[in-house]
Image 1: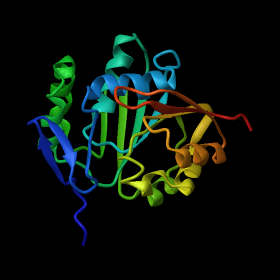
Image 2 (image 1 turned 180 degrees about the vertical axis):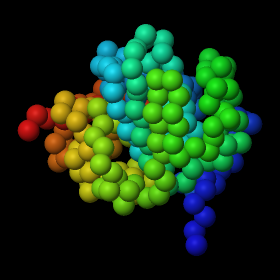
Image 3 (image 1 turned 120 degrees about the vertical axis):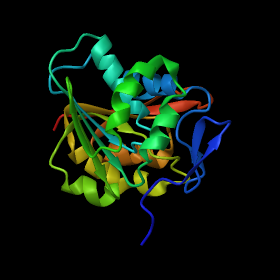
Length: 223
């Protein structure tokens, strides 16, 4: 049976790199800033937050996107509950996640708050309902009954992890997106953009973060 855990090595002692996909888990420039630019701002957050807002994610990785979203939720004074569902085929161990998150002193308090709970398939904290669905998203997403208000499409590079970007999976993303829901990703690969368009999204390209020239934002077209 194939090992279903992350396989990684550490670059410069603090940047986790997947040896399975030969790709870093977050930007070499600044992973937390990339999350804020690509996934939070790319989905119009915090302006769209409301009680019950649901974020879904392809590729949980280090958990950095979750922590950044929770920090923004709290700092922007939201009330109620944020729902966060993530799909991950190869989860990190608790020790690996904690080590990766400690590279960002800006979220040290938040990382420490979450640290005792890893690894967690589900987690209920004040203002947060979190669920990790482990396994190949090509099988688990179609079986999911939820619909997201915002998608973080954060798999490894499409060139190295094409399975998480194929058109049939983007169609499932579209089918599991609420009316006027959005998606954002660091990649501007043509086949990813076309897959989102075919899934019912209006797709736009904008300047990318750091060394990336462009990224993609998308909004579900009203039916």
